[in-house]
Length: 279
Ligand code: C2E
Ligand code: CA
Ligand code: CA
Ligand code: CA
Figure 1 (cartoon, rainbow, N blue to C red):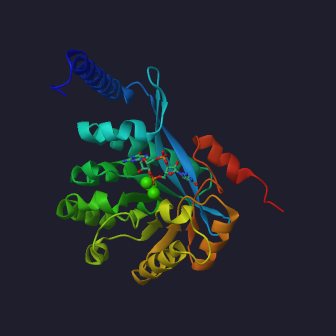
Figure 2: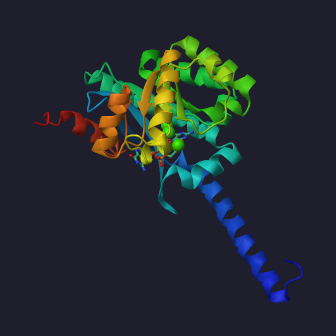
Figure 3: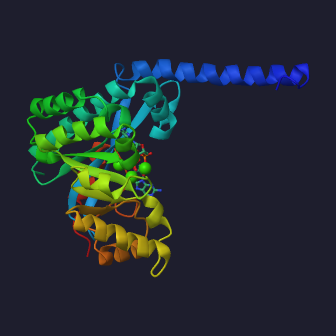
C-alpha cells in the first residue's frame, strides 16, 4: 500500500480507520446491551420425526439495538467472542433460557427441554458449571430440561479444559449435544470421550440431500456412528417435505428447520403448540 500514490494510501488508511472505529463502537454498544435489556432470545422448535410432537426448543440470540437495528448472531457474536463479552452474554442466555423453560414447564410442558448454544470461551471456564447449576436452582428447573449445544471445534480449541468442564456439566445431569456435526475435525477417539447424548447433523449435509447422492451416504454413516455411541440423532435445516421424509426413513430421531418452525419470540412457540392437529 505504501508504494501507491499518496491519495491511494490515504484512502486505504481512512477506510481502515472507519472500520476499526465501527467495530469499537459496536463493542461499546454491545457492552451496554445486557444492562439495557437489548438482548432477546428467539426459539426454534425441535420435533420428534417426522412431524412432532415438540420435544425441545433451541434458544437463538438476537440483539435489538437502538443504534444498529435488529441483529442476528453473525453480526455480533464474533466480536463478543474476541472481546470476552461472550461470557456475560452467555451467562445471560443461560439464565433467560432457564427462566422461559420454567414458564413453559409451569404451563404443563413438562416433557420439553431447552437447548442453549455455547461458545469455546465459555466452555474453557470452570465457572460455567456454577453458572448452570445456579440458573437451574434459581428457576427450580431439573437438569433434565437443559441441553447444552457445543460444536466439535468449540470443544477442540482447548480440548483438555473443555472436557473437564463438560464432564462436570454432564455430572450435574444436563444433556450435551454436538452441533454442526461433520464440519469439524475431531477424532473419533475424542468424540468417544465426550459425554454427549445428542448429535446434530450439520445443515450443510441436509441442504443438497436427495435420495441416492453422497449426502445420503454420509448421513447414513453419521447416524450409524451416533447410534453406536448411544446418541440421539437430530437433523437441522430441514426445509422440504422430501428431506423430512428421507431423514425420518434414515433414522433421525428429531427434526428441526424452517419447514417445521422458524425461530421466533417465545409467544410464537406457544402458538405453534396450541394449533389444532392438521388433518
Ligand atoms: P446453530 O446453532 O447451528 O443454529 C442454527 C442456525 O440456522 C440458526 O441461525 C437458525 O436460525 C438457522 N436455521 C434454522 N433452521 C434453518 C433452516 O431450515 N434453514 C436455514 N437456512 N437456516 C436455518 P442463527 O439464529 O442466525 O444462529 C447462527 C449461529 O449463532 C448458531 O448456529 C449458533 O452457532 C450461534 N448462536 C446463536 N445463539 C447463540 C447463543 O446464545 N450463544 C452462542 N454461543 N452462540 C449462539
Ligand atoms: Ca445450535
Ligand atoms: Ca447447528
Ligand atoms: Ca451452525
